[in-house]
Structure formats: structure tokens, C-alpha cells
Length: 91
Image (cartoon, rainbow, N blue to C red; front, side):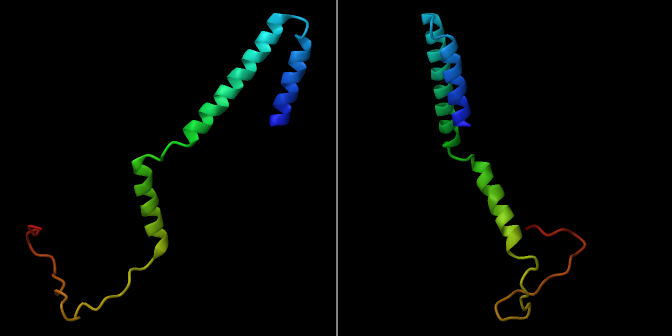
């Protein structure tokens, strides 16, 4: 891609080489292309927004395990699971 752009610029410069205004226009085009390239590289180097890390963490968690691990509800120190009551709990 860079070779194509360089070749096109050299061709355009050869067409306008006999006039100083053409050389100035060619130099301006090259400067604009370099500036656009530098700006694109700077935008790419910006840190990621905070929301994308959260989304990436959710995707990684979803990929880890499809079935939750089995736990013993009667193990010592574990509260017994409660059945739903008539009224919702305060917690």
C-alpha cells in the first residue's frame, strides 16, 4: 500500500515538476498524509474505555465454565437453602 502511494505521489510530482506551485501542492499533500498517519497511530494508542474491560471480563467468565460446580448443601458451615416464602425476603 505504501509503495502504491509513493508511486502515485512520484507520478503526480513528475507532472507538476515544471511549476513551483505544483511542487508546493505535492509537498502539501505529502504533509497532509503524514499528519493523518500520525493522528491515526495516536488514536490507536489511546487507552481502552472503562466499559470494555467489564464486557471482556463477562465474556471470559462465560467461556470458563458451562455448568456450575456441584456443592454439598449439607456440608458443615453452610446454611440450608430456603424455599421461597409468601413474602419476599428483606435481603
